[in-house]
Image 1: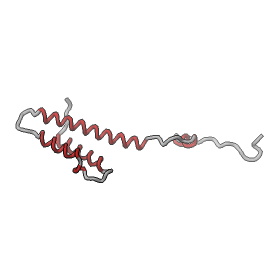
Image 2: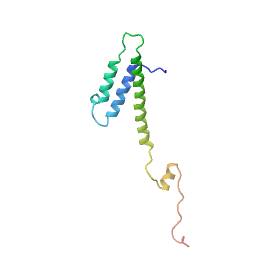
Image 3: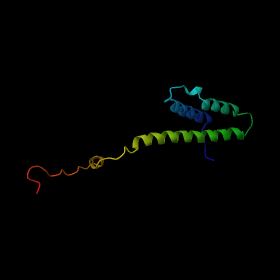
Length: 113
């Protein structure tokens, strides 16, 4: 199993992601069921006097996995919003995106046969 870092770092990362999620609603993240669940779980699995606290390590692994999921979703949404297609583009707009210009159509007096 790879090193997970400290549980405090994971806890702070989870709180940061909860703040990002609740920034759109305007509600404080401390009033959400997710926050209450995390506090309850972390308090229930504190480090005890045991030399190997399997449940505490399991909680830390699950919390780190959930943190990775929340970060990945947030970054995916940001990338999707930035690079998502804007619908059908004209030929001129498409050429302009790659730095090209279309030739001008000849016209004017005397051009028509």
